[in-house]
Amino acid sequence: MSVYAELQKTMDDMLDAERGILAADESTSTIAKRLKAVGVESTEENRRWYRSMLLSTPDVGKYICGVIFYEETLSQQDSRGKPLPELAASQGIIPGIKVDKGKGDLPGAPGDMITYGLDGLAERLVRYHKQGARFAKWREVYPITDHNPTALGLTANAEMLARYAAVCQANGIVPIVEPEVLIDGNHSIDRAAEVNEQVLQAVFHALYQHRVRLEHMILKPSMVTPGREQTKASPDDVAMMTLRTLRRTVPAAVPSINFLSGGQTPEEATANLNALNQHQDKAPWHLSMSFGRALQEPAMKAWSGDNSQREQAQQAFLKRARLNSLARTGQYTPDQE
Ligand code: 13P
Image 1 (tube, protein in one colour):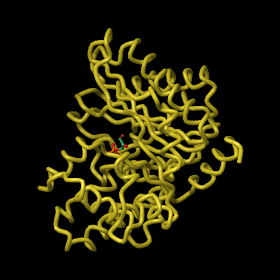
Image 2 (cartoon, protein in one colour):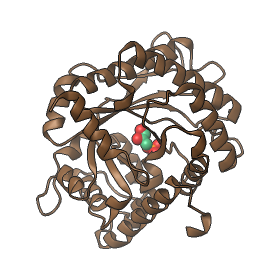
Image 3 (cartoon, rainbow, N blue to C red):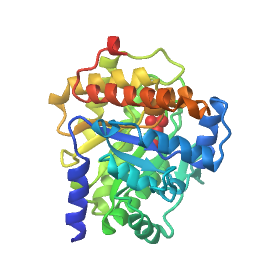
Image 4 (cartoon, protein in one colour):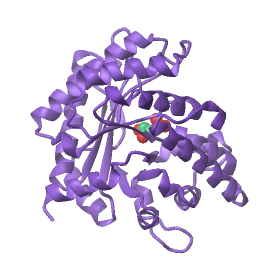
């Protein structure tokens, strides 16, 4: 199969009017924080047990079309010895892999950050592909302050995303391009819209310069919301501001926009996704999810390290997956909670 045919096949398998992506790619330090919050020690066995529990949830493939793994998970197996990528595939869920190696300060741009991991990326992708991965994810992070992101921050982060996406496509792997504008701070929704617009404009300029085929990628942006310390905006306001920003910056050739949840509560993220899809007529793209916390939080809490709670944890996960699937078609209402 040619590289383009392979990219197109993965897109065809993942584009779906009612399903979305589960982000289960927390790095070892991030999952340790999440597990600690529910009183669980982050051992390799706990991480393996928890992630295979999620993926073996009966019927979850009705609502989830892809899962993003962390490198460790690609080589783990469930208790019957089935590799986790195969377990995902058996539910109709395409396995993907987070390939960035975390972030640090961006020298020359105080307050901005930059993500590492381009060296050796092509070789890693060949290995991940053999292990079953068909798409990848790379996240750049943009804090909002009065001075950030700087002009350098916008350009440097966009360049990283574009170089990563080009390497993925050359190796037959669909790139998820994730420019995350952080929710932290007390900025207004207008300021968040301004920053998201600058970020996406820079990202699509860089993707164009690096000849990334927009038809074979997925965008994973933040929803446009006020900062965490501000009063929350209504789902309708979030939807209107988010759609205005996306319409100004994201070409119609991009097939799917899969939002991150970025610190919204599970119910909030679902309500906002629902409001976005109620305005689907304003969007030439699928409006879907690639949630981490908003899909997993209730399940992780229900488990809390007690393996006898497996069924309750799976039910909590299935519930969020199902409600977000309803939100994909604008048919979610809070009384379904
Ligand atoms: P959240 O939905 O928890 O923000 O996670 C999505 C993700 O993959 C962040 O990189």
